[in-house]
Length: 432
Image (tube, rainbow, N blue to C red; front, side):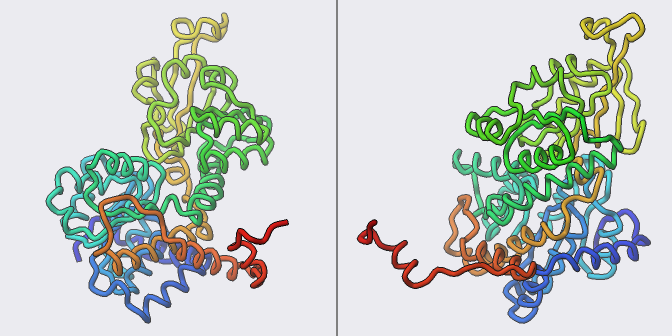
């Protein structure tokens, strides 16, 4: 079997990690059992460009159980767990093209390998695979039944393609599913981002002023977690409704240019580029920590940070780079007789801090997201002839089924509408 991984000798550790995650993914296990019996993906070639983690491994195993030929490559150069990749290849015979820390050239070679696999269905996390499909592999697009997209960033890119008439394949926006963005984005990103920052820095959160760029579901989740640990939280936003919501939720809200002077730690979670720029770096305190939890490493303008630095000390701590700036020339208002330089600490090279410096989302959260992914793949396989080149929401029945199974796995039951209540909700004739 053709593959490209770091070290096959890591297989034992990877298998343990996969099995450990499986214990906390009961809904996906139920779907795996269902797929084994029904074989809804029999003969389907499926290429997945996702973070190669233990949770993703269990999704890949589920898809294979449903009869699919699965090919997996990484959606981020720093998120791959090399031991998991080894176990998928050796224990589960799933071809993996992913190496932690791979350079850009290797990253794109792996994406090309996924499309050379000639898939019927693709799964994407950030839309890099789909972008390549629409450029270098454009002719192949007509053979793709459909694709799933897992991230806010990816859905934004694909909806832009749809609006411009450039989208060549049907897309299921798994990211926009309530079972994904309400839980994976809010609780998963909230916890794992904080986990990555603490692992990288060992910083005390209590008492810190933390600036959260973006108050979407990811920003909401992270802001809630750090406030719960005693931080003073500032939200920066460009969306008036989200800014108002943040203010009503009790956070300080202000432009980044004002927050830059106050923050001890900054985290971007927007899906846009250059959220933190040179004018902000100039105003930051000595010792400010900067991290990103958006999908791509574009939210922090690292070229401008490098340009401002007189010296860059790489890996002063694992996943921490120090950028030393001259206060006298760049920040005269901060300079003192005894202090002529300041340091800004960049985490995980500006990439996804929750995956580069930690292990990503907890398995119990990914249980819902990946269950939705698996069922969306089944939906595409059964309905691709009716799908058009547009971005679709996840069907409501899939959402309801996943949510119900998750509640059941947690030992939670809920009320059901009576016939009288259902009639009342359907009727306009019954008044007060």
